[in-house]
Length: 151
Image 1 (cartoon, helix red, strand yellow):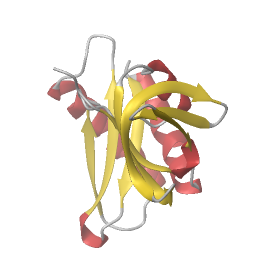
Image 2 (cartoon, helix red, strand yellow):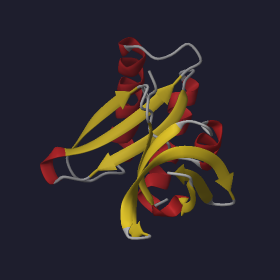
Image 3 (cartoon, rainbow, N blue to C red):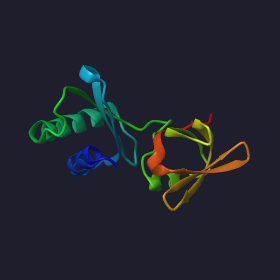
């Protein structure tokens, strides 16, 4: 985790927890004037628009005071949804048996995208089964990972 992401977690997590929610994860997409800081929150009974607005208001105040991102950005607060992004080893382990779509920062075995069944966690690696072949993907090499909803 980068120093900026670690700082954002340290600032945002206590605010979200104090409001009675769980901080699921944070994404920062840097695109000049159109950068986005996306905060995912979760709760046992789910998340609605009012929950997102409440967290957005409180987090916005903290970020205005602390100013961890010097450039212009848009703050978004969202539920992880059905295609929830996965950020931590604990989240990957909890969703073992589910289908996942994973994109790596750097190609592994000649490819950057993997779609298969999560088979758990081994140390700092994610176990993913794709077409009956198991891959060990280091969590630090994962750019983005999402659960694939099954209907």
